[in-house]
Length: 502
Length: 107
Image: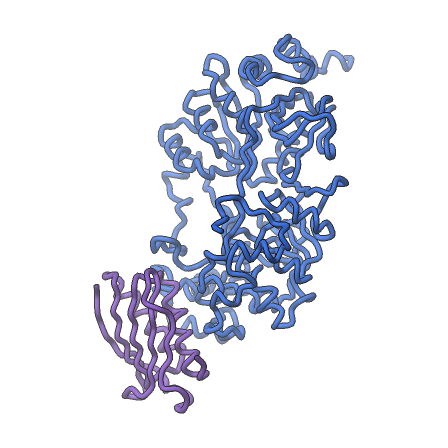
């Protein structure tokens, strides 16, 4: 059998391209022709990838897709990392989706729960980002990928700007398996600052009538950091960062870890830890890292995405950040996740998704307050994810993000539980109860057990790691507000309008 | 509004000299003030008086104070708490801060 006869996918692709006719001028499509073009290039049964994670979204293409009906488009196997936009929900409501494989639902969580209840959410599996990207290369290879870029040139080369995010992880497997790559761009220009995706891997380009959806999702205003978070940050710094001499880390993006970043130039410096810990980071360019960077703490940062407002700052600090030859910031979600998995001493966070089958001896630290807003306890006897009705609706999948066996330490305002050093499940539970504060779980602890664990160093109170609670005040932060971050950055950080109150 | 008092067994304060009282926090929305005073009797109990704007959490308060009295030698002190709906996580911190000020003799 000759190659030509078995190249079914290639032939099918040229058939699809053939149907497009005058809807495109070469690779370029005018925005009004997008719905018709989508009808012609997508076939029933296709694996369709919609780009969009928690920061960057191919929202124009998603909206055009959602303007179609079931008669135009059906039996789609949707693959996408985050179900974020109302348009995504429409695809399910209209019955266009046969199966969905995704990572998480973000702001559409409630809408997705409603779809699950209405049996209109045919989930294949819930993945971590890298699991899903890896499957794009193996068994979930998109036939059509709808992606987002900052700019295209006249040949169809793409510039992704600061938020490279997951674009390469979608484009490569699609383009190298005769799939169709369709990019929305903010702008078409004669010359790109740099080429991130070569035109050879791009089939169609549309200049969207509005810029892609992009959120400053990880900007934490120091003004909102509480004394309790500062206490936890001090405890984590002394009891974990200092104790284990953590060099490289995958940092979370919440207020707890922001507090740690803002303590490095003050408390960390006083403890003599500069140059000894926290040199290499896998984290987005968080504005709260500016004081530590300016104080010379940080050697290198690699990021899964950008952060709105940090463009000029990151360009000016190219020794620290990954930058293109044009000087501007570069990120890569798939590679960043890999780096944050394999190349670090420690993962610390409370809200990130992570594969925690970490190789070798790594620290996996959960940094949580015992209660969340509205007096909702953080510690529970059984996760909501294990609820039988949820498992049933998701065909037996329990959406657990981090399994207990993988966590080495839990830090709360009550202290540190070194659960990795526990000898039994019962001991683990006792250690967790010891730091679970006055939640229903914590109230079940027994004094004698806690004392025994404390004696063995498995449970440590703030005083046990040399932290004075009276020092846990906001004045210990390198700066107390966004304006201070701008000052630290020497005017290079441009905070988005919602963070500017001066 | 809820008001209650209870004494908890606690080892006597280590140094008996130093400042007679210490205060942490303020009575503001979502915050509380904790006043710790020396010279209470008996010397092996921490005497507590709590006034909180949010009723229904007495069990949690008593558990938090019992643990504190157990972990820290605070016998012979009187603790007065005025709470304006502080989140539970803030309660222990303020207690620790006031105790720290008292025993280290600062502020």
